[in-house]
Length: 188
Image (cartoon, rainbow, N blue to C red; front, side, top):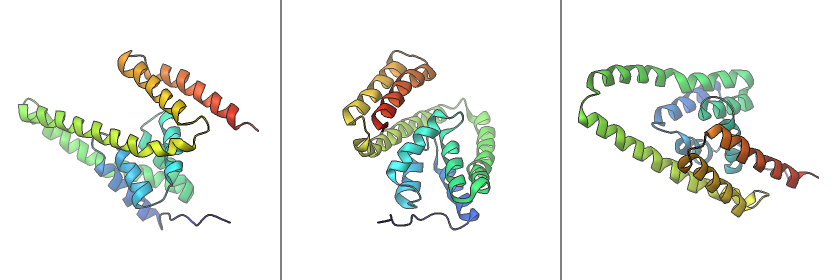
């Protein structure tokens, strides 16, 4: 039995507008917004696809959401879709960031501005934690099992946040070991 066809963007314009909307919502971190929009609202990806492709997007150089957008745009419309997602993610936010930069340069010494920025960083951290909790069920299907995956997350957190090891080193060692073990488990 073939799986039901998955919905996708009907046109390049819809793809552009979707990624533009994603970019405009992504203050301080877009993981929560991207997962909600692409998996829950638009259903262009399943949760498992999102977890797998987000992992690939994270190990590639550059911003994660741009990498994911390029992969998704290419999937639906080839190189034109990849280009349109990039334009959607960059056009309006670039103009807004330039305008906000001008405003911030005039008011950066105001204590209210510093307080507002600290509050936004707390909200962004909360959104990322909430999304991580949403993504946990996808690990149940991983061949190495949920306890191993949680162990990898804990080791990575301790190495980066507490021991202050460079992210690239942790990614190469912990990620590399995980990839080799997964490959060995999936090997026929």
